[in-house]
Length: 373
Image (cartoon, rainbow, N blue to C red; front, side):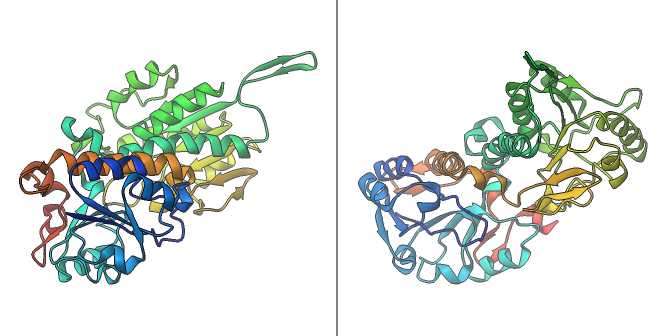
């Protein structure tokens, strides 16, 4: 079993899909691990560290030749996979809804594409969930980045020269990223509030010491979709939420937006009029900017000044914490493959529940129900 790891080619990608720790673990299973030269450099993992862990290091062509499994952060172009074994697995993030041509190319190339972002949110797959591991770091980084742009301190400070009041931080969307954003803002000393369309998150917000901001007296709105994701709300709820947020957001110094709906453009949470109501010097970090943005006027990887408010967001937030993000992602991949490792066959054999959920292509066809529906 030959496992290949290529250097990431995307301009904004500094992560790597394997670390020396997981090289050792795959080698212990009996796999041969081959890493492209320089693949981990941007994440502070040297070629020597991979070699010491038991991996081979070489050119892209050498790495891919006769590969049975290719691991990646973002799925490589099919052209880079020339020389891999017929039917080779590629386990990576594919953006299947946004990159349909790439999925079709994988089918045409005869590869078995395994989309890690399609990992089902079930108990036994938690350790394999790349969306959660990367979102956790993204929520942390969003607050740190916003704090860096904010021209004032986060915590209350009592000094001989007077008292500095604590910053007010508002987190919109309480998934994995939102919960970490709440925790991070609290640790920095801010007064934190948060909101979500899912009523079940109210207790989670309170457990972290933040104030929940929720629409009341709108019957039948729970906002819980399949797999724990939010769903789109009714017009009645959207109107009530907009009014609530407008009143609350005007008092905030920091706003972090995290709302995403799988397979659809990010929902618009903050309008230009709401931005105009905020205090000059306030900061908004749009974690969904790469999927269209929660905030009107946000631009990926740029700081936009509107009405005296700084609006920012990264196209790849987790990549700004490349070392930790790589480590968590690499462990997700190892946990995924090792859970199905068949010692007699010397390779992983996927079951139906998880295998059918993540598999996009097989035997020259697109086979995932979410893409065929």
